[in-house]
Amino acid sequence: MPPLLIAFDGPAASGKGTLASVIAADYGLPFLDTGLLYRAVGHVARERDIDLEDAQALGEAARFIHPTLLEDDALRGREAGEWASRVAAIPEVRAALKQFQIDFAHQASGAVLDGRDIGTVIAPDAQVKLFVTADPETRARRRFLQLVKVNSALTFEDVLSDIRIRDERDSSRSSAPLEMARDAVLLDTTNLDIEAAIEAARSIVKARRGDV
Ligand code: CDP
Ligand code: CDP
Image (cartoon, rainbow, N blue to C red; front, side, top):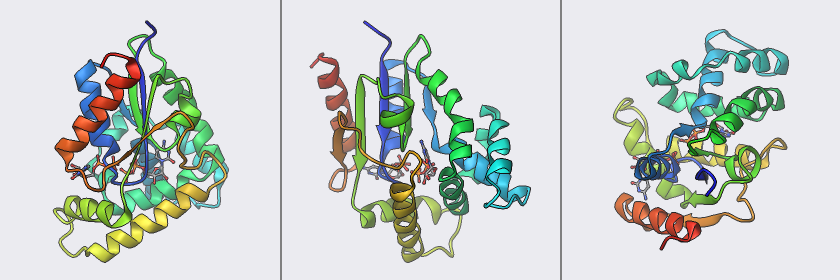
């Protein structure tokens, strides 16, 4: 059997990262949260005051993103998501991050990745592809509960607005937009708590691998 390669895509706070990390642990596979790469580029752009119109400088910054940079807690914050989505629309940035992700996906051990374009661009050959989604209000509620712990001034409406803006930007950009791969399985977690969502993801992976 070829190495097991599993792709999770979907919009913000759909649960894809949590599900992907659980499935990776189930199968003993390395896991990459590709959103952190874009968050790291956004963070560098912000810290160095790089003009968001300067595609070349942003592409250059993206070439120096290293996995050790991905531990920074600042990358998980509200602004980091917004900046990530802005720089992620720039083809030079996507090009600079592409090979690292392709190599991670195709290592001999197999791998699990989550993001927006894993099943469509980074690993169109993945044996299992899940497109995880939920309605915007549900996703905003989940993200609000995460972010309010570190920012008590935040409101649910702020987060819902962020999510709608990011959904629209990520889906409408011309370079690797957020879209479901034709051979992906849709997992709508709107009415599933995290345990039920994990069980649903496990069933999909098993069924796709033919080991139900
Ligand atoms: O966790 P959440 O879904 O909120 O965000 P993320 O996965 O960390 O991604 C942050 C942003 O990076 C997204 O809104 C996308 O614009 C971008 N991204 C992307 O374009 N392609 C990927 N494979 C992963 C993230
Ligand atoms: O990676 P992504 O942005 O898609 O979402 P996540 O970080 O995996 O999930 C966002 C939050 O929603 C986490 O706190 C999850 O535990 C929670 N969640 C949930 O409560 N119910 C689900 N069915 C899925 C996620």
